[in-house]
Image 1 (cartoon, rainbow, N blue to C red):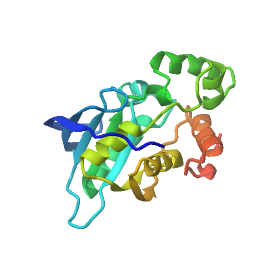
Image 2 (image 1 turned 30 degrees about the vertical axis):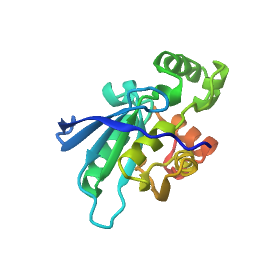
Image 3 (image 1 turned 135 degrees about the vertical axis):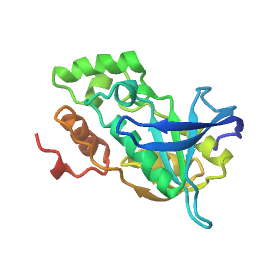
Length: 209
């Protein structure tokens, strides 16, 4: 995979965050020039990395339904909330990537939901629409991390593809730290498909139903 070109920081601004459960965190939001895909990705810096330590990093793909509206069809909202707290404690970055629906977009994601309701899993629904199972590319994420000086990281993720893509793009993933299993009655099939189809580090024994 070709190495990404340089990006530069466009702006920095402090944003106090309050989540629906009352948890509060202070973020520094950073925007960028010259990202490879031209999208408006955002880096949120939380906490402080101890001297000689490794930043904890989460690549979080935008999910309007889960992050904003609290949809139970996925685990995105709870993962976002968990990630902010864990990164604040450890010091590091949450990269909020504009990759709705694993890169297929909001409307396509909702159409894929309709196909899932007829029995397809989350990956087969995408391919039935003529779309990739997972269309995400993390070149811009690697650019952002390089610009931030975070070329060696601990990656907060259950997804082995994120770690592999970052490694191919010149980011050293020292270890992959799994998130919790955020199970609901509505996302069991979704989580099981991630574990069985793409090797996500999710304990299948937790996914009853």
